[in-house]
Length: 99
Image (cartoon, rainbow, N blue to C red; front, side, top):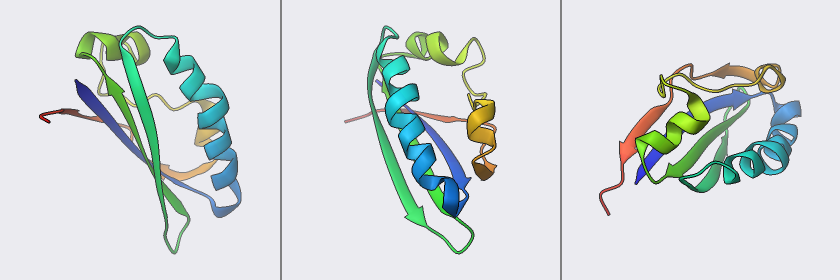
């Protein structure tokens, strides 16, 4: 299994909207991709905004291609989400799950 990690810093007034977007649009769309296992939202308050760490779990790198395309390292950030963020990772990190 592979975990895909992506981090973004949302504006305080957009943090709740971003969570809603993930739960109602992104995660349901991911559920329709073969090889998708699960997703988690982690967040913390900072002085600038609300930092989110989004972790998606996949059965294989090939499954991630179904979501991210051939270059799986490039972050998938819809325009709608870009407007909610102060800053965000352009690159997603991938980790092999050992245990």
